[in-house]
Length: 187
Image (cartoon, rainbow, N blue to C red; front, side, top):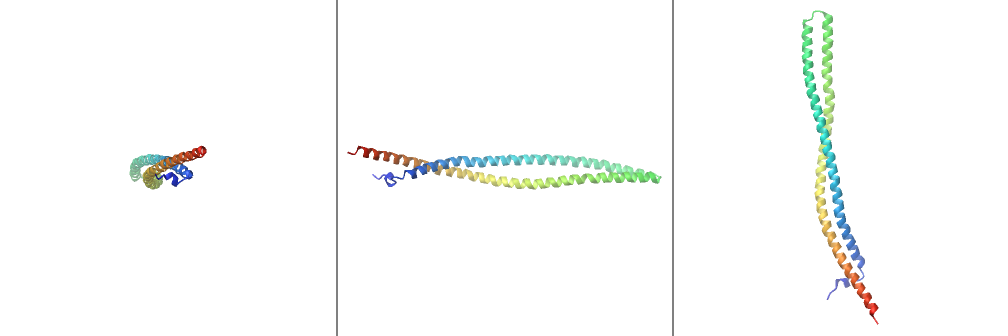
């Protein structure tokens, strides 16, 4: 009968290495992909937080735009009313005072959009960053699915190495013990 163990006589360190290497592969298959999945989940959570904050900021700016439009409508009505009063007024002092009030209302009306314009630009920049992060998350999700394949391969190969290494290591130890017993029993 052909004994594989005699082929590898004295190589129990090789079998130990196969066994330990296989166990390490299996452990690595469980730990590393799990770590990557958890970091991806944290990144997705941070992305969702940024999206929520941006949506709140967009709603705030839309509300401010609506309020500004409402304010502009009232300002335009006020300017028209003052212009009519200026046309009706006959004294130059009153006309000058009404002209100053009209110019003041126009300046106030034109200053409101400047603040909103900066906020809108800030939101556009944040949207670009979020689009970049969304693409990055998609790439990382693709990597996570690849890690699933790595996990399967490492588990199969590691289990095979561990089983083969343990089996032949046990055979090697058993044969070594038999040889020792034979040497002891020799007359």
